[in-house]
Image 1 (cartoon, rainbow, N blue to C red):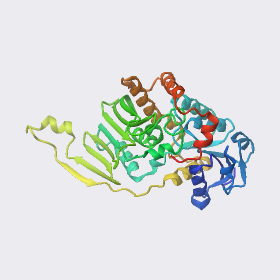
Image 2: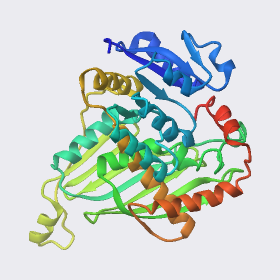
Image 3: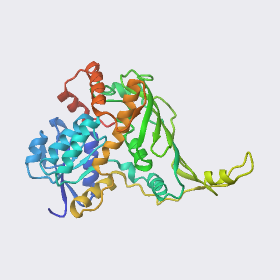
Image 4: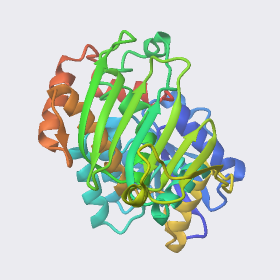
Length: 382
C-alpha cells in the first residue's frame, strides 16, 4: 500500500459530501478520496472525485480503493460492510452499526474473519469531557459506580423535520426514532464509560409529541452487574432541552453539563464513613471543583486520522467497529422492554427483537420499497 489510504465513499448525500470535503480540505493527510458511489447519479455530478460509480459492487471491483467510508441508511450499513470485508476492503462505518443486533453480529463475524480494519464513526469519544470522564472512571480513584443518570433531551425536532421525508420516523424507513436516530452516540458513551447494563426496563411514547409512528419520548431504568442503577431519559419533544450526565460513586460524583465537567470528591468513601460515623445526620466532607481537561475534541478528523493510522501502521482505532453492537444492544433492549411491557435482560434475545421489529415494519405507514428508501434517505443528514 502507498503512504496514503485510497478511500471510496459509499453515499454522496449531505453527510457523505461533508466527509469528502473534510478530507479534501487537507484535514486527513494520509487519506485520499479516490472514488465515490451513489445510486442517485445527480448526487455525483458536483462531487470533485475522478472515479464515480452508480454501484457499490462495481466500485469494490475497480481496484481503486483500499478502504470504504459507508454513509448510507441504517438498515444498509451491515450488508454494505460485509460486501467490503469479503473483498478485503477496510471499513469506516457511520453510526449506528445497524438497526438490530442480529444483523450487526453477522457483520462483526465477517469482519473478524477477514484481515481488515473496521472502525465506526463514534466521534464523540474524542470529546475532551467524555474522555476525561472515562479516564476518571477507569482509574478507580472514585471507587465503585453506584448510580448513572443521563438526561439528554436537547434533541428537539419540530414536525416539519419529520415531514421532510416520508421515510423519517417510520419503522420501515429508519427502524426507530430518537434512540436509533439521535442517541447512538449517547448510548455508546454510556457503555464505553460505565459498562454495559444487565437489565433494562423502559417506558416509551410513540408519536407523543409528533405525528410519527416511532418513539419520541423515552424513560429507561437500568441495572448493572455491580449493583449500580441508572436512568436514561431522552426526547425530541422538549424545548429547551437538557444534557446532564451524572455518575455517582462510593467516593463522590461527576457531572457533565453545559460544556463543563464538575467533580465532588468525598474525604472518605461513603461506606467507610458510615461505618464509623456517630452523628445521626452526619455526612462525609466533600470538595467540589471543575475538572481540567486538555480541551481537545477532534471529532470526525480524529476518527479518520486514527483509521488511516490503523491501516498504515497498525495503530489503535478510537472506536473499533465491532464495539458498535454494544450501544445498539442497549437500544434494542429498551425497545423490546417497551413493546413487551416488561424488564429485559442483556444480552437481548436477538430473534425475539427481530420478530417484534418486523411486525412493526409490516404495519408501517411508509410503504415505499427498499431501493427507494435507500435512494431517498442517503441524501439526508440526520
